[in-house]
Image (cartoon, helix red, strand yellow):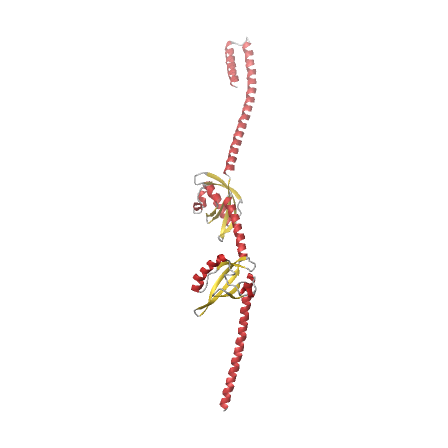
Amino acid sequence: MKDAKQSTKRLLARLQKLEKEQDKLKGELQKTKKRYRELYEGSRDGYAFVEMSGRIVEYNSTFKRMLGYTARELKKLTYEDITSKKWHAHEKKILEEQVFTRGYSDVYEKEYRRKDGKVFPIEIRTYLAKEGDLPLGMWAFVRDISERKKSEKVKKESEEKYRNVVENTREAIVVAQDGVLKFVNPSTVKIIGYTAEELTSIPFTDFIHPEDKSLVYETYKKRLRGEKVPEVYDFRIITKTGEVKWLQNSAVLITWENRPASLNFLTDVTESKNAEEELRQKEHQLLQSQKMEAIGRLAGGVAHDFNNLLTAIIGYTDILLINSKLDEELKKYVQQIKSVLHHSSSSF
């Protein structure tokens, strides 16, 4: 009898312990459910569960808010009802080839239609829910990507604008890195004469004039090291056809594919350089002409003064020749002097 009472006490104690453990588990389960519900409802992404027929049966507040329907309205709809028709065939193919074969889909994009008729882009991934081998429905994890699409559109439009500028400018625009050109625009091809493939596969010094190679390469290396270099300078290139052209380079240091590079804006200044050279030659010719003219005027003045002196001397020889006291021998010498003076006078 005593043993029976003790057994009963032990059993009651065990039951009470089990009840406490069960209450503790219930409390933990409630906390877990609460955390799950907070996570489920507080997520910025939408969650929805649909039956295999496609009818929406469960969802979080984000999913409901992004579509604008009431709870009663949503439960009358299928996922196809809220999806733009142009995406139906595409999504059907994804479900058949991915979800129903391997149990989940890759992330894919499509468009939802709100209650007010507004269409907006979403990113979605779908998982197949099963009980054993029996499919019960599908979970969809949905993200509204409207803002991302707007940003992508703005970025694309901006890139298109810059592309139009780069491709249509008359300047050659190149990116130099590792001693070769990583990027060239159409004007570069036009100015230098090599194809884009050729320009980006050979050292850029290959088409620089031999006398300017050191200037260009050393300036390029100093710029990459962050040293102070001229912002603008001129150098010569040799085109594919052998023509020598002058280019004016304006360059800045940039990051290209996570490494330092130089962005160069090259202007063909061959015509202005040739014009400058032609002007220098003409200035030189004019200076030489002016020098010769001055020398001519100086020589003319000297000749005039010299002729005046010669005329005076010739006059004196005439006087000597008229002088009767002069013997014939001396007259002969005076006559020779006069002849020489006349000859010198005629030379000027």
